[in-house]
Length: 462
Image (tube, rainbow, N blue to C red):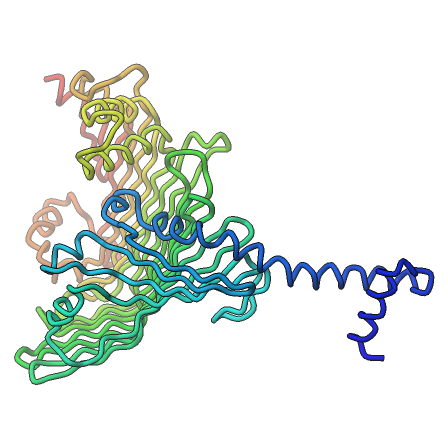
């Protein structure tokens, strides 16, 4: 007996109430199978009934809040099926309307598949729904806009996709196809772009952009630009605070250009992060780094590696910075005024401890150089404004150390040679084994440079 026939016979026996003829194990298997089959048949129809109202809302929510007033859904058509649906949205973007005399409409054709089992371009997925999105320009102004493109070469294919999960996740992706164009003035080749942005509920959780090879040359100038396939990614953690942990990175394997001067960079990686540094989530730590494997060209630099950390950032200070940036970028912003924010940030910065650590290692002028900086701010209780705190008291709360380890021969080939040589002659800087070492320390208001003391407090008290 085939599995399908056996399943049907079990179903008939269950429906007839004759469960005595069914083995208990087989009964459980059959019952679970029947439930799963019914769910796979019924759930897509239930999902399809709720998609229509959610489609328009999802499109609007994907637009950043400051730009939502510039987006208007002027029409929609929806055809619902049991396992899939189709939709078309007519969207007006106000800045696009300003480019033409006649209205321009962005048409979004959506082929929607209902869950729970989804066949997507990335394979089999489990979720609420998925959709392929094809955008086109419509309206009387569309032809006017196309006429502005100075070539008959077909534009790259642009399409999108969407995946909604049962856990309130929503991923929106876009794919831009490869593009090539050339004429007597030059040529451009672009390998395309893949990007995605992910939301959980109303919160942005991350984005990813991957680009193909970009080649650009201009025939009338000795200009050639090459950028290898690159990647940028950012992740945002869930938080009920105004400033939430975030991390991001960008990788560019190689860049080369012939103008304004010949330059080639390989192995560039940039990383940034902001995380809580205390269990109570009252302090934050920010880290940034840039690393370059090799540089060739007119610049005297061949390698570069820089990393900085800012620790013990008070959460209220970070939130004030966020609100200040928002206020400066939006004239209609509500809440605290700019002056109040700056005043609160100044008092917070004065009162709370903070630490800065920065390290640089590079090869320049055919020599290795290292710089290390560490600054500790102890904070001044009750202080509110910098101009009300005596300079001597500020230096008492500040501890710092700076170490420079540079190659003597390379320094002699650099533009700084004229500045360093007199200090070497006077014995202030003493080279050792081909290296010039400079160490400066600031502690209790006294600056010490290579064992020479400079009381800063006495200088301000004179």
